Image 1 (cartoon, helix red, strand yellow):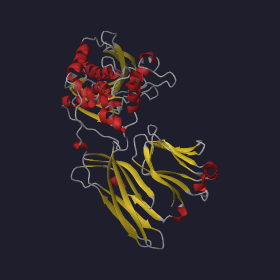
Image 2: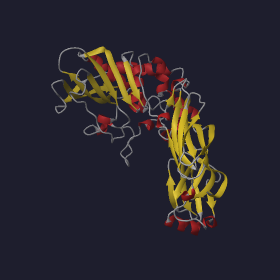
Image 3: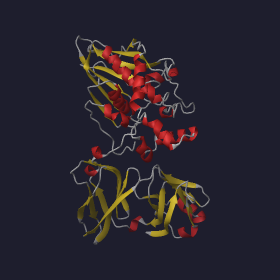
Length: 479
């Protein structure tokens, strides 16, 4: 390892100096096949690293950053640029601590492995640990240090652990890197022999995490008023067409439509659509509502098959402007700020800052209308209505359980977004970037933004949910 620069330089567009320049003389003895490595700390959300030559011509970049360094193989072309013009290290979201030129051929030949079963959310009483295995392929004793670095999911430094290991020739050792954690999620990186072994999110005691409600005093009166508005609207349940290619001897499948609350109080009711399957035989059947994830106009429409769940009534809801309400012949239904350049819609941005007309005011109530529809069907057992959905659909599932007046018997939301917006903006790129852009365009303060978001934060619906919930999440998915 030949270290050609050390320091502590914050690489950020908001910093006074957001780059590090390295003179071409530092690369005089560099060779093709070596590695140029940038070591960093203080990793931030959406961090990226970029290598430029001394004339600010971009050579390559890495995004998003993870672990403790980013590096590039020195090719013939890169070497020529570095030796002629030097280098500029730039990017955003990290503190550069050193720049090394590494000769991989001279690194100790150690096989580094980790136990994938340790990449998980640990429950209370289970000692969190990462097992790291090292195998020495050298013909001599080798000593190295296994390091474990932890920061919170909000990119705050938490703790470091280290253990020194000496390996005889051919020896394999497994090191248990034990951790002391409080309830939360952590960005963990393991490193040994100048190499990052793995970089993952782990968790500890997820249900022990406390996120305080941000609901305003009038939160429930706000939603009760919208529910009252829904009750005053004729649902006009319409069986638009039978999906003949989906029908079987077990179930009929239809495309249906119904009316929901206007986008603005006093306006015209909004038409929402769904696919609906119902058993052909007589009787009362349990029912399942499926809520869809966010649809920018390119998602694949999913229609039920007649034999998929033959003993159930099932509904796949398209809330206003999404899925069925965003495709021909109903494409004109999507009036929620479609970007004409990309053809996509970001529903978070629609009427941002206005609780009376924001997209999710109506979309959450659309989910209640779906319950109304099922209750209206003679073949539906009204005491056995269930709900499920992923991502945005998980948010809809929670909202339906809270606003559905106890008519959801049990629910299965998964990989749910749209929740805990205060922490969300510290952790994720999207939809935080949408909120920040809307804030910039509307000029609202942070306080005003969080006040607005609190009315649509599904975390704040939790206290009204009384049915059983089963849920899952994706540990490596920051949103």
